Image (cartoon, rainbow, N blue to C red; front, side, top):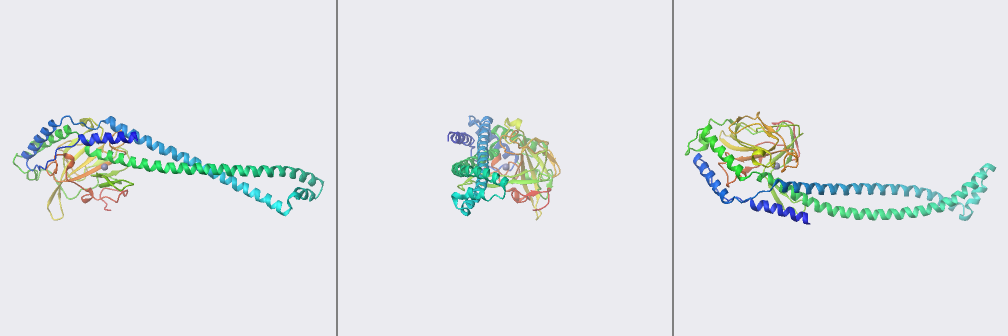
Length: 411
Ligand SMILES: [Zn+2]
């Protein structure tokens, strides 16, 4: 109970201290973007005492998960051992049953007390007589011993069965509570990938973004950003899968409690995974790199390296739609802000092993799609509360846990 209480406390601290002021500014011109940045900085300075979940607290949670998993594994091992024992007992009893049956049969056909006598008298010669005499003596003893054995084994079997049943019941209860706990913790950890960027880092990213418009695209303060980047940011017609092959391991949408069915958290991306062998991650389509956030810059391994790409997609009716895609947990990012990319550009290397990323439980790419240009179409004053949509609306993926053999085949 205390463990659960601690975990709840840790996450309560995290979520309480990470609340950002709600705003509904839409920066459409460079001037507005600058104003938004200034306000953001002001808000941040007001709430400077905010704390975020430390790496240490995360490690503790991970250790707790590992410990409980190990416990389940040990109990499962015990159960397997007990089951094997019961199986062996049952075989023994079967064998005893057969032997006993033979003896009982013998008793019945031979009128009980006369059994050995008749058997001995049935000898066909002297050698056989000696042999039968010896055997019948042993048989009498063995006979009694066998029945005692039989009774003991049955008793033993009953004890073991009760033991097993009790253990099974305990295990069932334990598994239920552990899986509830694990689900809660895992959901909380996946929530963290959305929150893993400090406000300082957001401010740094925003400053670079303003610089990109100002220096690389020469936008004016009162100029509409959409208009300004026309002809400067390459267009594309589609956004394709960022990995050359792999599986869909988690979908966009709410995650529910396995037992109560209550909605616990929302997963804002599609997770894809494949063999972890310095696997290349590609841009989903042509565009420009608008932000790169490295683990080193944030001072946390949570989320590891993240790349944001701004796209201008020509839709079916010839209109331009703007999107921002992001790629999380990468072992390394291979691009920098301002780089122009195509869907053939390798932007990084897939990561996500727990040892290198404290907010991931295995190697994968967390692929996020938001509508609008980066930082210009957001509902709140937070990079990570952008208008994220189900990536499936623009990028084709097979069903959950389905395999894709290349980047473009439609499923
Ligand atoms: Zn994810």
